[in-house]
Structures are given as structure tokens and as C-alpha cells.
Length: 207
Image (tube, rainbow, N blue to C red):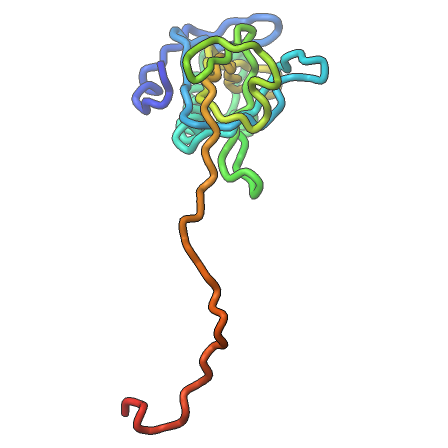
């Protein structure tokens, strides 16, 4: 189910709340996905030893960022609607609002678009523009790489003081770098001095 379809949020089914390793989770009956348009990797995927890091930050295209923001609003709304059955103690809407953990960063002066922090999936795969599987290597997907990214989510997780939905980064489809614009304007600076103001002659002016 792709959350880019606004109607999908109305059809998500949650199979109750279960406890697993000290945290509670509300699992989705069907996994959710988000496939971006051209987006940009903003964090290094590998450490100095070449090992893949657990989290990545991707600057999303505007459409994907809007879909993710709407989804996080839905997470809060559905938690409010089910708080009477999901939680053992009475919890106010205000407490839920202050406890929601967002993984969607706001735009900054340096980066004009919003960025999503996601957990890198164990089976994370990089594809070339021909659809071939590439090695997981810093040279293949360095910081500032542009790609179509695929994220997946399976549950809302509730901790002691925070709750939210952490997405997994599943795939990256590399895109060629956008070419820089070429100036097509032909300009030759004038070598003659600028003309001075016209002489003060009434005959040269409209009355």
C-alpha cells in the first residue's frame, strides 16, 4: 500500500497492539511503502571501515515529503482514536501530541526540502539505471547521490515516553546527475562610452 495515494490512509488496518521486547507495537495488516521521485542522500551510508550504518537521511522530493507528513498526522490521529483500547492507562490527547516522534526533518536554509531519517534494512539493495544490483559501497552511493528510494513500514511503535513509525530504507535506484544549465546568452560588453544626458532643448521634449 503506497501512502502517496491519499485514500490509502483511510483503509489501513491495524491488527491490534502487541508487546515485543519491552515495547508495544500496533502492526499494520499490510506493509506500507513510499516510493519517492528524485531525492537526495544527505548522510553517509558507510563508516570508515566500509560497514553500512544503521540509519540514513534522505532529502525527499516535495510530493513524497507531503505524503510522509500526512502519514505522520494519521499516526497521531489513529492513536488518539484508539487510546481507550491500546493503552492500559488513561492518556490525554495533549500527551500524545507531545510524545509523537517525527522522523521527518524540517527544511533549512541549507536544504530547502524536508528530509526523512530511516533505518537501513538488512536487505537494502542498490540498483543501477539498468536495473542491475550493485555492490553496497560508498563509491556506488556516496553522500549527495540522487536516486529513487523505496521505504517500507510495518508498525507504529510505542516506547516509554515516545511513539511513532520508523520507516526502513529498502532500495535505491540510482539516477544520473542532473546536468548544470549551459548559458546560451551571447553578450559582448560595449567599448564605447555611455552617452551623456541630452542637451536642454525644449524642442526635443513632449509638452
